[in-house]
Length: 492
Image (cartoon, rainbow, N blue to C red):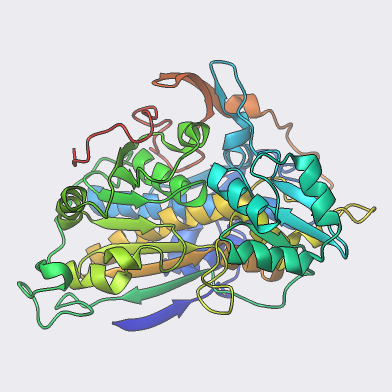
């Protein structure tokens, strides 16, 4: 296996196929994904400029991530369909609406609650701390770490936090498996936008040869990827089998996008971990969802059967969490050297925080975004969207599509791709410049243009339409979300 780190690059703007030229963030993200620079001429943007307002260049990050995902889909569509690469035209209004998809969701007219009462910013004895307690087990751990009863309300939580130093709260929560992060100044630490390793087609890590070698768990390794054949322009990922081991937003946005583009996405969750049904109603479009307990032999056997013919595994669990189940990348490649394996973590893959739990809101606090966006009275601020989550999701989907294109043009072999919310935050903080204010009036932004209603197992959903924009792109998902965990664990 050869390491090939690909941080955000330095390719400048390129001329476009009409409208505004492809901007620097788009070119940098495309270079980080290994995309051919000449394809940037296919990219243009249109729509309202005054979206996702922030002191940081959130709009530029958002549209760049959707643009590279759209371009990667167009590139693959041309390779699998035999025609030219379709033009990519990204609507900034569609992007802005998609980046807050969870806020636009309604279920039979009901608007879900994004953050639980014990989640948010809290004053401490020496500053501020951000907590995340949306899941019941995280709330229970947080309260226990602070010596509070399991039924303690947010008012009591505020009283206790006000008397403790922020870093002490952070470390006590970490030790208890809870989630709290001290609000910090802007970090100088730079993380790569994506890390990429390629495996040769003749074998994988832990194997002793080529086809027919025995990998871990007694399974048989093979270096032969399943042929995908031709595909229509609106389904460039048709035939792709994706094992979705992700939760919350970033990973599910990635796999939701792959499902939009024709992939057979099967999300697998443990029956021991609860999931927010409203979150699944937002990110479950186009996918199926099943529950398997990997500690149970029968369920593990089913999972191994799925893995045996999967093309892609996307994992967003804390680093090391799946290793005990024999699902570390090296173990996966030992069984399947041809796999595309994508890993997502919160805090980056190196450094003292690499193994810690995290969510978008916590990373914003820990890397300095919350302090950068603070109000005049000092209260920490937030980005206008959970842009680290959504942006990373589109980058992951783009990376999978690009890996398929690379395999098509350069031959078989495995791919190992690693992303982090901290990497996307680093890109936003250090590598994307703000544009000078435009004197031209911006087009009015009305999010209703990108909203629709769909009947589902959850009821009538008002939801956001996908922002992927290339000629011939699908306008909506092929199916609404089913109930979480209720599908059969089989490939279509």
